[in-house]
Image (cartoon, rainbow, N blue to C red; front, top):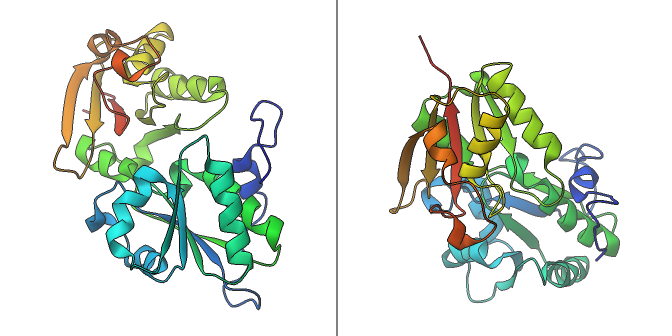
Length: 265
């Protein structure tokens, strides 16, 4: 498995988006699936995603994600769990095993199309290094962004979506979300990055860029779970929670979406 230097490149998200998927009836090896499992509540897992998980010989993903779907697997399914430090090793083993003939599924929170292209790129790299003929197909999931848009009543066509939940430099992303709120006067849905770009930090940045301090800001936490909470602020009030880079520096968990609402006549 290659090591990605996100400052020097290549960004695995770029690798994942380099070309479209092959036709579904094109001859070749059985595909590996990259499945979005939704916000973690299995009622929001699509039937196609569930089938890809049930039929896999080996599943790879971050430990917290795999734990959500473990009950769908049988005792013969091998679960390769990882964190950021051992992600490369887990994906390398995954690539070797699917190249040897095992069926494989990689799992990610939400919908890979909303915040998971870096992970998809790493999966694709690991698989195709072992066998370039094995296609990787994305099975979209219900994203917490979709749930948040419903809870906050921000129609997607009137809303700017920005994900900060990725590695690497975020300057361009932060400027884009600021322009959407201040110049274009669009609603904003943002996926914060734990823990250096949390909701308070985003609110502070928006105020620095001239956003109206009275704009409504909702922090939607643990959506679809029993612990779901919606915290309601003005942008100015939310900015009081800015600062810090650790879990202890914010009152919010890492399972949050920030919605900033424009006034609606």
